[in-house]
Length: 443
Ligand code: PEP
Ligand code: MN
Image (cartoon, rainbow, N blue to C red; front, side, top):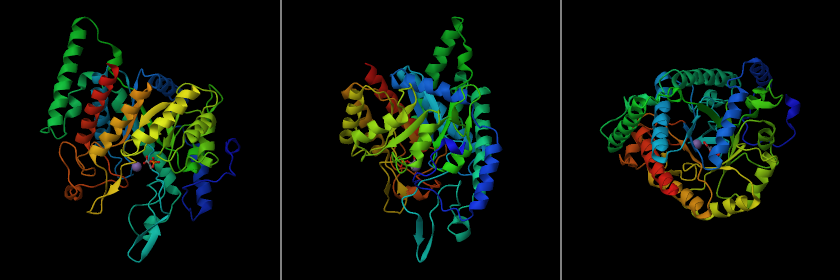
């Protein structure tokens, strides 16, 4: 498989593994392990993305900034799934459109960093690069990159995906349980009651259909897809396999892989990797991207114009979205090429609170999504989805929202190993606001 990829290219954001021999052993073992996803599922997702790109479906992608081994528990996984199912119900009911549900989950364990090291006082250690590489604890031992963690990534992803599949195929995601998904969450908030009201409406609609003799199987299960940033190429390459049906290479570590803002150099190893695999892929697009860069990415990654192949995940920041996005969308439109346009309203809006916490304001997040919709409505293109960092837990990491979390509140429950996530309430709130925008756009 190694020969498929160009191994002489520059490769950004890789850990300085101290033990290359151990890394080679790990890679050998990873190559023998069974696929986590089936290539046919990746193709199904691709055709759904093609639908969303044409405006006939909406993409919802959410989960942790950085999954951790410790947080891969039944409760944490279930709360994230419930949150995404609830958001999907709000969006689907509000916009009368199928929603493609994708988790930043079951593999999102590696992080790019702005600095290779972190300094606290006099001590300087390697930066935390995600549980795939090292441990968050600030000691020399914890921060030393350890290749055996890649095996743990595989096994934790496998266990996570198994539970996700059990939940989404085994009855838990049945649309008739739309009320149940709200159980266990803080109920007394305004958004909780709003969700209850919506669940009641959906329940009534389902009862009405049932009374008319319509009770389709489709309501019983949902398709839920896994995704993560393809960052540590040793891992992703070891999990790239030739699909026996099509003879084509697929990265079977997840259904959908994206290339981050820091690793999307056209002549770099990550883009070469993305080019060679047949999964649907995404690329993050930041405020410095030129229209020419965007067109070159399309030409490189989807030269044959395969429908659903390429998604642009736009992360400009609330301040830039209305000026930086239009020239890119315009030139793509003019070229006649198609991508799915997705809004990541998180990564351009991070700042440090006076209390020292990395945070984001819910208003900025909303403002960026609004700007994203405005640009597309003005240019006659489709705002095809959202990509958010969220958790089903009641954390205090992003400020604002209905519960009005303040800078002082951040210390109450700040648990993210990396970037601040929307909590359960903030996530639902976002879904209601996006549903309104989708509805307005259809009028
Ligand atoms: C991320 O999605 O967590 C991330 C690092 O994003 P970006 O590449 O857009 O900065
Ligand atoms: Mn992040």
